[in-house]
Length: 123
Image (cartoon, rainbow, N blue to C red; front, side, top):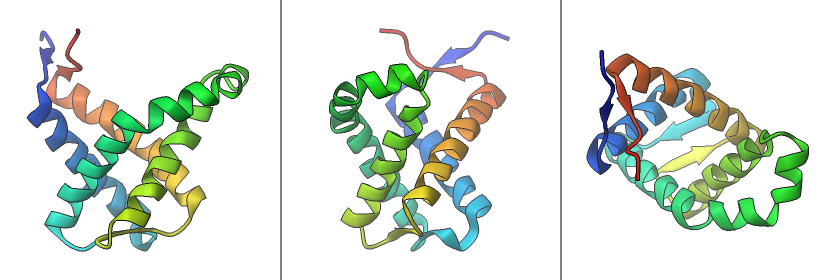
């Protein structure tokens, strides 16, 4: 089966679904205040990953090279913590739980995209 390219809305839906599944896995260490809490958090994390994460990734380039890219999870965890500080409808227990959430989100995103046969749009 050929993989279909996703647009903005399907990617956003997948991100919100993955956030919800991650909160089920982490239990009370990652809490949303309902459906809209998940939707808003997915949007804020997406915006932080688009605007802030590349700057931090550039500043930590030597660390990322040294760790063969595993430092990216540390940056993703930081974006999750920043989102929890900005939003009142989302809480994460600590930075290290956010790093674990970033790992789980990465794995679940790959699994959901493979399950539905989608891939990221090529520029």
